[in-house]
Structure formats: structure tokens, C-alpha cells
Length: 471
Image 1 (cartoon, rainbow, N blue to C red):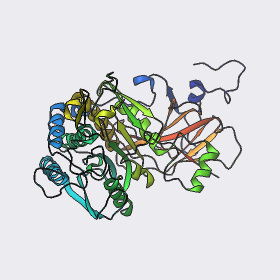
Image 2 (image 1 turned 120 degrees about the horizontal axis):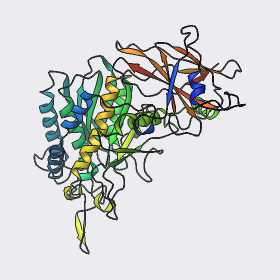
Image 3 (image 1 turned 45 degrees about the vertical axis):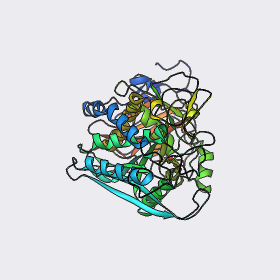
Image 4 (image 1 turned 90 degrees about the vertical axis):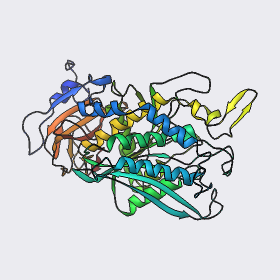
């Protein structure tokens, strides 16, 4: 795109303007290079899946996922208040089976994967009439390069009938949420034999239907440890591609990502309002990253990002993580059939109600698993999201100076600055600035949004860090 005659480059945003950016102040004299427009899906930030990732995605098996969903449904009910010591029915039997399966996968990891039960006693509350033990089943695959950097993926293994307090009726919970648990367990199986840069946590959590209880406990445990959780995905109701009117959309998965952070302080809110950062929360950057690495031919899926924390009248296990300032988002099927979730198993006027396995689309779940795998593997193998990203605002100028902290990863190669018009939902331009911690762009900070992402020696990129203003 060429410069328009008679128009200042400070008021027109073009690739030519980006290409003439100055070098990093005090560190780089050559002009930075820029690109826009034309990678996978028209996203300049998109990352093509490497050969190793494609091999991982090919191993995900819809038949194994189907077997897991059917086994979980066969426990009759997995209600949080159901039996914890019956060996064949109830949440305790499901817990023990999940634990045994994950331990079986861990034995193939060469000691890198460990599995534990994470339990606590929930005191009485709105949906808990008596003190009740809540137990998450957690498999942790320790990273080899950045083990203290964590990414979490979860599904909830509890289920419910029409009455959320009914713990005796059948509640097979195939779609909600054996589908998510089966996905997580399949990822744990496939990833167990791989060496991963950062640590991956595969969790089957309990107590979701009674108030996101297991996820809240897990998130609080991470917070108390000051764990560096840089991304979390929950997979909840990912089992069907068929809507209530019978239409199918087998190649789309929704990803819900909040704008204004749930954890935002009054001081942070004031900054957000001043810079217009409502669409640049860590959750939104995580969602953009998922589109960059997982919406391609290797997964066979389109990731439809929804700019909401969750659906109307509903909530998921990502919310406790958001409330503790961890980037998190929720995967859910493209259009739900509410006759097959939160319903007693019954037939009314010839119509089958209930969350049964026969209403699941197992190849669809496998494709959603590939989306998750692409995101998690890419996050773990790339450098972490840059820290300390700032946009310097002390002086009134028509250029933009950005600074950030250099990461500690051994394979860190450098950084890229990204930018877009304030009305664009996605990053439209990328500038390679090399191994620097400061860069000046000859575009006004008042007119566009900027971000910074890290680049590894393998070419994998981190999620974008949105800079805060610094006087």
C-alpha cells in the first residue's frame, strides 16, 4: 500500500507507515520491518502449525473420547451430593475411574506427569445442604524449560438432573460435561509422552453445577502459591454440533472471552477508561492467540470468539480464574440443545429428553480437542507473555515509545510490536523489533492500539501484552 499524496502519514494508517518506523531507541538504528494482511485466515499474527504439532493433533482419537463419555455416563449420576463410596454409581465411582485413567497415562510420561486428588470440605451454602467433600482430579505435566509457567485446561465431571438438588435420579451428563472431561483426558494421554516447555495442568473438577466450587478451590490454591498461570481454558458443553432445531455446525467452536476484567481494581478501571482498553483484556488477548494458532486446516475448525464472559443465565469454571486475575476463557459448542442438558431422562410426546451419549458428536469433540491442543502446545512451547509492557506518555509527541521487560527463556529470540486501528477487533500489523526492550513507532499513540509479543527461536509467538500508560 503506498502513501497517499498530500496526506500526512501521522493521520493515515498504512503498511508503508509501519515500514518506516524508527529503530529501537538507543538500541537499534536500522528500520524495523513490518507486515500486514496475508497469512492464514488473513490474520497477520497467525502461526502455522509446525510438524510436531500436526503429529500431536493426528493422535487425538474420537473413538477414545467416545469410550470415555460413555463410561462416565454409565455411572448413572455424578451429582456432587451423590455417593462418594459406592464403587459403581455416583460421583465417587467416577472420581476413582478418572484418577486411575490419568495415572495410567502418567506412567507413560517418564516421570514428567503426576496425578493427584485435590480435596476440601465445602461448608453448607445455597446448593450444598450439608458439609460435602469436593474433589478435583488433577494431572500435571511438568515443563522442561519453564516449569513455573502454567497453563490449565479443565472440564467438570459432576452432573445434574432438572432439579439441581436431585442427587438420586439418573443424570448421565454426557454433553454437560463428560464431553469436556473426555477431551481433557485425551489431551493428557496424547501430551504425556511429549517434552513440553512450560507446565500443563489437566483438571477434571467437581462441584461446577453447585456453584463452580471445585474450580474456585483450584484457582485459589494457585493464587495462594502465587503460581504463574498465564492461561486457562474450560471446556464445558463441547459435545454436540447439532442445535435444538436440528441444524448442524460441525466446524465451529465458540470461545467466550470477557472484556472488562472480573478482577479489575478501581485504579485499573480508571486507566482502562482513559486508554479505551475494554477490548484488550488478558482474556481477549488469549482468545486472539487461540484464533492465531488453532483456526486452521490442522484442526479443521473455526474459532468463533464471543465478546462475553459467558452465556446469559450461565457460568463456567473459567470465572474463578478470571476473578483471581488469571487469563481464562470458555469453549462451548456453537448452538446448544437445551433438551439434552440439565434435564431428567424422560420421553414426552415422543421426544427424548436428557443428556445422553447418543446426542453427542464424537468427531466434533475430537476437533475441539485439537483446538485446545494447538493452543496449549503453542503456549507452552513459545516464550511467555511479555511482562511490564508500557507505553510512555510523559511527553506530547506524534510518535509512540514502548518499553517492556526481557523474558528469561533460554530460547527467546526477540519481540514484535503489533498494532491496529482502535475500531479493529484484531491486530492488523506486525513489526519485528529484534531482541530489544524498547521501540519507537512513528505513529501517534492517540490514534491506534499497540501490543508486544515475544518470539522464540523456533518461530513460535506468545500472546500479546497490552501496554499500560507510564508517565
